[in-house]
Image (cartoon, rainbow over all chains, first blue to last red; front, side):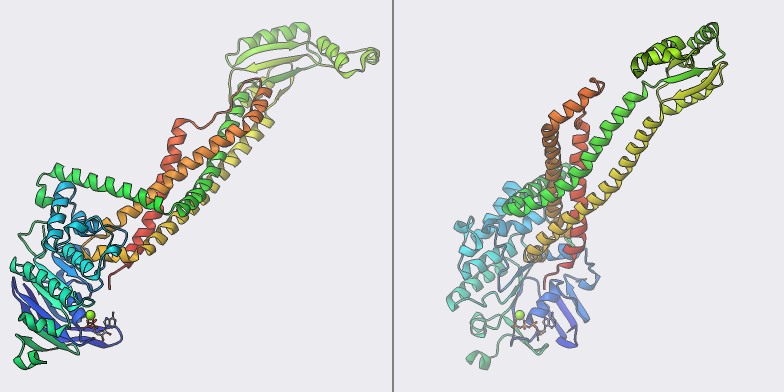
Length: 228
Length: 324
Ligand SMILES: Nc1ncnc2c1ncn2[C@@H]1O[C@H](COP(=O)(O)OP(=O)(O)OP(=O)(O)O)[C@@H](O)[C@H]1O
Ligand SMILES: [Mg+2]
């Protein structure tokens, strides 16, 4: 599904954010990406969503090398990837419904068919009753779930989340993670960047750890780490 | 069809397999975007008003000049039809000669009418009009020539001039005079004003495009974060720029309507004065307002300006916004 082959990313100014990173995320797999602040987690996700391009190496999704994707094709590639952000990035002047509908509107959906899909997505995150609200009237956890609904409304095969629980208390974080688990169980590949080690440990999924841009660990969490 | 995932149908094609259905969807989407652009303008009424006012004024000015030129042209055209050639005959010409010439001229296909003012009649008139009266009785011989007033059938200054030259060559004709110079001057003036109108119009309309472009640029900057989000969820530049193009088109349309209203208001305001002027011309002409065709052109020009201005703005500014 998603494969990194010796991927490096240097930012202008010579800073190396990712250094020869390789891994593969299988179809229907769920994994966490951890590491200290500045380790390169966001950078890695940005390479997948084509916000950034690698300096070296190849990023491959479903057998297609992203370096072959032209800038005109980028929007179409992004429609296959659901993205969730720490600051949820909702449109402030639009209702929850409109926010979730945005990816569908972009793809040309209209009317009842669009409404049906939006309601299904809102139902999956448990926010059906908030459809008519504006984002500013929502709590942090609710806003994050709206972001998730928007990311999954057009049923992308791959879901990326960058610190989706960054601002949430432990209980809310657990709720959000359950939502991700549910999508994963429906066959979606999920990659979540997070430094909430305690939460990840309890969930017992594959974990990849970055340190100064290098992948220093890939696999289930060790017992001793779990004990921390 | 998805680029990355071969079998994954996306968007309209996944639920609307017919071509006509997809066209209909596109029409609906465009309609919705144009209406939402209108709503967007409504949300910042003051800014919209200022922009429309500036645009409207820059369109009103050339449109008013156009109206003026059109009417002056009409006046000069109505005069073209009524010029007169005066043939001053030689002193040696006898009454018979004059009669012969008059008959000859009446047979000329380019001549509409010939009127004789005999030297006696001319003297009589001169005595009355000049006020010298009796004093002129002391002049033994009448120094005035016979005059034939010829009204040509032709109605352009050039053709009239040609006729005048031909008539000057007739026997007994001392001098043929065409009262044309002021007409030509008027025509030249109208021409000049017309050229100036074009030049001013081009300048003002270029200014209007810049104004629209700047307004749209500010709107884009204002929505920078929204545009970033749209790009992140897979919107193409084309999709993102469409509402801005509609905004530009609406602004242009409103400016066109405003220009029309201002002109109508101006005509209404000047109605009295215009009536007085036109009455001087004994209803030979009536001040022509904007025709429906000109009204439509005004709107079309506004729409075109709006489109060009906003297109220039979105071209450069939307592509430059990239999510980080
Ligand atoms: N656009 C950029 N230009 C230059 N340097 C950048 C840019 N974006 C990120 N970096 C640098 O790259 C490094 C990795 O950044 P990245 O955002 O990937 O870290 P992160 O693991 O997501 O950290 P955090 O947990 O704080 O979000 C950081 O040191 C950062 O300063
Ligand atoms: Mg980060």
